[in-house]
Amino acid sequence: MHYWEMPDHARALSERALELMREFKIAPTPPNYELWFSYASGNNQELIEALDAAVQTGISDDRVQMRELHLRFFGGNLTTAIDDMGAKLQEELQKFAKVLEGAGQDTATYGTTLNTAAQHLNHGDVGKIKAVIEGVIAATRAIEAKHKVLEADLKTSSSEVASLRQRLESIREESRLDPLTGLLNRRGFEERVDVAIQQTIEDGGPMCLMVGDVDNFKKFNDTWGHATGDQVLRLVAQCFKSNTKGRDTAARYGGEEFVVALPQTPIENAMTVAEHIRQAVESKRIVKRATGETLGSITLSIGVAQWVKGEAIADTLNRADACLYAAKSKGRNCVVNEKGVDATALTARARA
Image 1 (cartoon, rainbow, N blue to C red):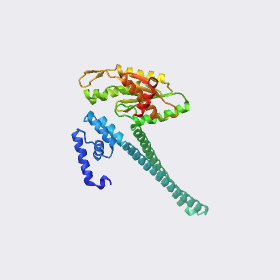
Image 2: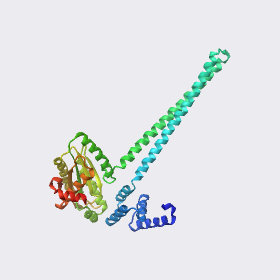
Image 3: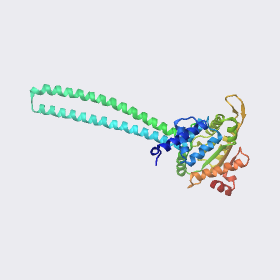
Image 4: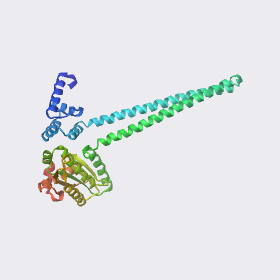
């Protein structure tokens, strides 16, 4: 049975959702309400665990994190927006069809008028020649006016369709981007990697993946606040962006984790790219914007793995993640590839 079939139950869930938002100082926006209503319903365990984890780190002033959670669990809203744009596009195309249909009817009427005039002229009815000519002139002027209206209607519809198409592409692109860093999000990364794999299969050559994670980010976040934590994530994202190019694809995979796909790149070269990114992050100094206080530097641990033909991309990412785990175990702030990790450890971490 649905909520709308149980008004009392729905009302209780609504009150509980509002109570939770007040308790955790969450702004009662429609997207936040949708998240917490679902939380109160208890139907989505993954959502419940994600919000519980977010509450533990403090989310009252973190609008970006709330947006990310809403996108993660209710990303269908973007699909709805795309569907709405598609419906509007269909409506415009139907207008096109009606305009053209009307033009066809007007043209048919004009043709009938000309045929009638021709028949009168063939019969040699001199007395009606003047009336026939006047009728043809009037019909010609009418069809000319109709065509001008048609041209204007078609221009308007064409402009509207072009605008809708542009907006549709904008929505699609928005659904692929991380709102905080401007990098691709997980969805956008997976789409790009699928294409990269096909190109790698066609062109041959190696492809590597790297997974990077900001060291001790939770401690930094808890100490200096989420606004400064967001500043750190943007800075790290810029380091990834400035050290990748061409076919490379960098993305924020979630939280403080970043990933990069490196087509046509052997593992030795991928290690060089990863090391450049690590050094770039380490060289930065974090300054608290509100006070100008220097908070020191941050570091990054990175794991690198090479894709194997026929392998699911998730398996390659798991191996890169195992290498990342090894980098953390070595003391953080370093790059580790699968050649430097015991095969048993790789398998065990991938299964974990």
